[in-house]
Length: 180
Image (cartoon, rainbow, N blue to C red; front, side, top):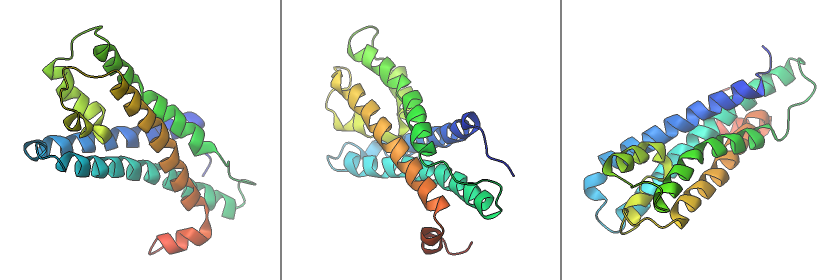
């Protein structure tokens, strides 16, 4: 067992992030008939963000468990402290690329069509119910994509680093998991 490269770690984390976005998009599409009520989009937004953060927590947790095993086997001297913060920021930056496309739509570079809007439910799966919170999606404010990008840049490294900390810490791992 050896430590994964930072590229492979980021690729695995990006896979978890994309899976979280797809799951959030599926949840949003399945709840679409109910999202016309005023409170349902807020509840759905909490759940989709929780799903996204949980999957990134899992990515960090698995890497932290692997690092803890290597530390116990004395294959490494110490674990990297801020590895998942930097990886999380890189994943968040990749997640912000579609926010730039949405910002270009909001600024009028090209029109926001129904196909693009439907695709954005899966690209922005963790925050897709937010599209139902704003009143007129066709007249999208330029602030909205910036807020989406900021949320991705905050949630992604925080959830991944928290999972990594839980994975490397033996005491919290015993309290967190049923079996080892």
